[in-house]
Length: 304
Image (cartoon, rainbow, N blue to C red; front, side):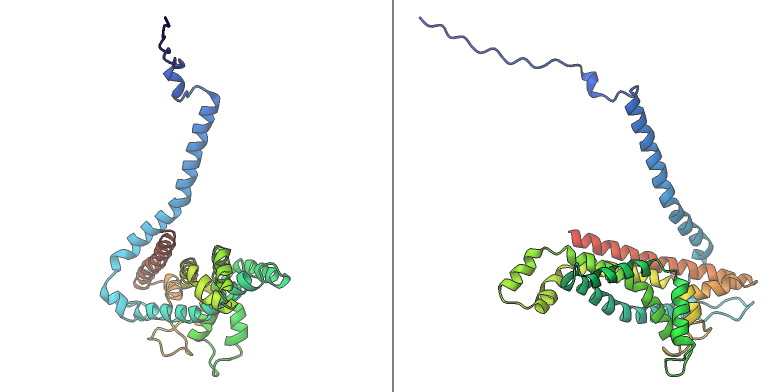
């Protein structure tokens, strides 16, 4: 006669539930809490200037926002009324000129660095020069274009012009566009290039049909960020585009821009011009903020 014994249930290890709770009396936990608070304070301090700038500009200039402000010419010194319509159009024109110069050159340079000469000495030199150029003060770029174009009257005998201002801003945009294109193309999987070459595609066809479309969104994000930076520059435009209180008269004449208008009106001893400077500051901040939000939307679209 055989006897069967049922297996004993496995005994669960006994432990105290209190061991799963955070013990704040331990020294390491106190240090963790301390550094968490310090990191949170630093994060708030990093965002606080942006919040203060947006709030202050909104309070000082947001109340003046109107259709008249956006469509009329600025008034003579000391008089009320008027608007900043010529400066808005001038900013768009100069930024468009800069984009038409910087985007093809920057994207082409990034394609060369990423697709044709990733580790060559010339590519390393271009990357080094791009990094140096991104740290050059904007006023130096303005002085350079002043000596190259404005003082020599290179453009049809004209000195200060929208074209000269666009060239100066394009120099500031180039490092951002080149580096963004270079890094974006490096993120494209190498297998896509091998597959295209394997079916007989040339390098040119591979770049134009495979790698560039795959990297379009990050490249577009970098371009938008470069445009946003160029739109807010003042020093290069003082030396190149100067200013005009009238509507734009062409690419080869002085032209009004938002940043230079703010500079000129903010130092005037008249309340009306100072108020217009604050209103222009608000409009310019909104334009740059919208460009940055659009760039973030493009980056999020790329990850989707």
